[in-house]
Length: 240
Image 1 (cartoon, rainbow, N blue to C red):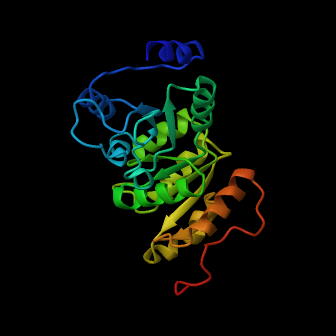
Image 2: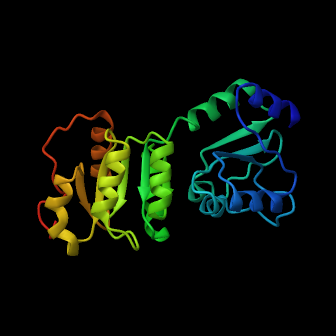
């Protein structure tokens, strides 16, 4: 693996190598990584590790799973774990580099939601539609990520714990005026819709987000900054 490390470092990537699965898990708990290149069975960890669990430890993580030519391919749980790619060893280096470069295209969506059970479902649905998203689970983390990265769209939960959604909206729009913000609201917050739109929200979506196709359409429109209809909530009435 050392030659592979050198190849990626020459291309400007920061590479960390570990030989033990427990060490890898510890690192993912304490540092942010963009990509994990790993076999189906992590050394030192019994069984096929749940890569979905690793993504919970490190929300920015994308997984490339390595299989060895001639060995039975491990496919258990690939769909459920949202593995981005599977590559064979020995590596086609050119193809592997292209895969990494594709995955590392800057994620254009930020999900700001403190409820893990909700943002995880939303992130996975977006991944199924070809959209990578990063997650911030609190306001401070969200603001830091907005400052550091160039997101096209933020999906902001009105119910962020301990925060005034109007204030958060104003803050992120002040930091990145060109970033569109889609507010995610429960029906009990309908009274805020008009004010949120006046403060610069692109539109409001009612939770739970059942119509993922419509959300993706709104995201793509926001990314292109070409609205095909006036800003409004995604439902004509609370009963839709």
